Image (cartoon, rainbow, N blue to C red):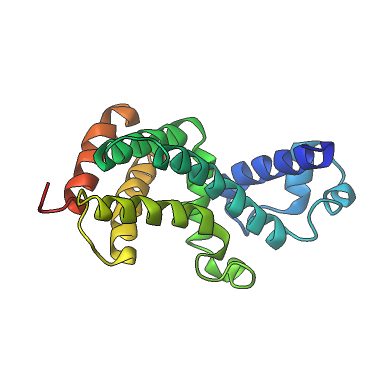
Length: 197
């Protein structure tokens, strides 16, 4: 990875934190530049606009999740075990890097107008969506998960995980987030499992 790529990723990580805490519209390029100890002019050498940075940030954050799920999808284990592993890793991300998940929930989903051009549909999150599709398809082929409409299954998985990310961010959980991992995974699995298992 070149020095420019490393710097670009560092800017994205800083932007994720600021966007997820202050919101997209309340965060400015000068805010990000100040946090990076860079000049505003230098920031524009990496990103032409705040909107462009926001699009890179959603790709960056969901690709982290995609890479983790891709590794799990390649494991020779049951679909149930994959769901349990993915749930654990997702919740670990929520705990260790909350800005990644918060950005998705509080910026990407709440400010769709920012992503209207260049991120239509699932375009900017396609790697992650593809890995979820693979998990569901392989589970159905092995009769571990039932055949069902993708968007319903995807929404159920992400609704459950996103809900726990939100509850964690609001600090209303009465236990450590990871203590919920197995029960969350069990609920996801029960909602998806085949009647044949």
